[in-house]
Structures are given as structure tokens and as C-alpha cells.
Amino acid sequence: MKKKLDMLEELQEVDQQIDALKEAQSGLEAELSGINQGVERVREEVALLEVNLTKLESEKAELESTHAAELENITRSESNMKEIKTNKEFQAVGREITAARKQVTDLEELLLQKISQIEESSTELAAKKSTCDELAENSAQRVAAKQAEIDAIQSKIDADIERRENVTKGMPASLVKKFTILREQRRGRALAIARDGYCMGCNMHLPPQLYNNLYKYEELLACPHCQRILILKLQQPQ
Image (tube, rainbow, N blue to C red; front, side, top):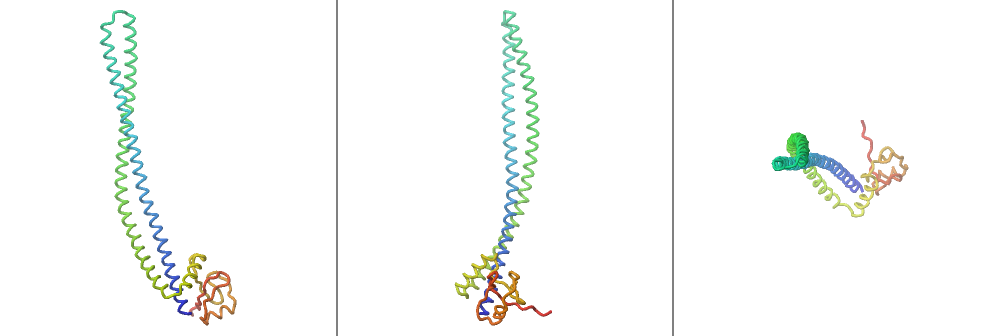
């Protein structure tokens, strides 16, 4: 029975090591995801700026087309004025030309604003692309480092899993099953140390007869309060 308890203790130790390694690995994977998300966010910002710049350039092209059309209308109207014979028609065309020139002036003002917006957007886009490139390069190095840590932990997990399999091979399947169920029910700790009449798993006082029977190693005994399998550990002398 003492051998079974030793094997159970080793099994719990291995499982706790695996749990700790997986928790550390999970934390690194979360950091890795955060790094990738940070790069992706900046790339999305770059994409939005590119879309905005394309829109501004399209609006500028449309204004330029309208501006050119208005200038052409003015030129045509001024040319037609030479053939007008009545004063009424002359005045009407004159008003059209005046309105068209005002429209041209307004369009030129809008064009200047649009050009200014394009310059600002281009500058912002260039800066954001530079930031994105630097972040991507830096992130690639950080990702590689994190991945190396994750892989190193996985190697340790694999080694511990192999060790666990070797331990459980020498144990009855029913005992392994009982251990697994207790471990799931008791937050990863199927075993508890018994010392000075107490269960160190739940800090409850053990019945004296039960505690005394632990010295005999005749059977597996469980704490009546938390149901963990008890392992006797005497206080080491100072």
C-alpha cells in the first residue's frame, strides 16, 4: 500500500507540474495573440487611411472634371456672344458667364481644400505605414521569442505526460480512475497530507482512529470531510 501511495503522490506531482506548465503556456499564447492583434489593428488603420485617401483623390478628380467643364462652358459662351444680335440675349449670356465664373471660383476653393486634405491624409498614411512596418518587424521578433517559449514549455509538457504514462502503467486502472475523479472534484488535488491529526487539504481534524490507521499502510484512507486520499507526513524535527 505504501508503494501505491508513493505512486499516487508522484502522479499528483506530475499532474500539478503539467497544470502549471499549461497555465504558463496559455498566458504566453494570450500574449502572442495580443501582439498579433496589435499589428492587425494598425494594419486596419492603414487600410482605412488608404480608403479615405482614395476617396479624397476621387472627389478631387470629380471636382477637376467639373471645373474643366465650367471653364469650357465659359469659353463657349464667350465665343457665342460674338454672334448675339439682341441686347436681351447678350445680357442673358452675360449672366450665365458670371454665374459660371462664380462656380469656377467656388470649385477652385473646394479643390484647394481637397488638395490640402489629400496632403494631410498622405502624410498621416505615410507615418502610419512607417509605424506599421516598425511594429510588424518588432512584433515578428517578439512573436518568435514567445513561440520559442511556448514550444519549450510544450516539450516539458510532453516529457511530463510521458512520465505520467509510465507512472500510471504500474497502477490499477480503478485507482487511476478514482484519482482522476477526485482531482476533478477537488480543484486538481486528489491527495492531502495528514499531519498532527489534521487533514492539510481542508484543515479539518481527523478522527483519531482514522489517523492512527494511516501508520499501518493497510488500505487507502480518505478524509471524511474533503474525501481526498490521505498521505501521512510527519513533522520533521527542527
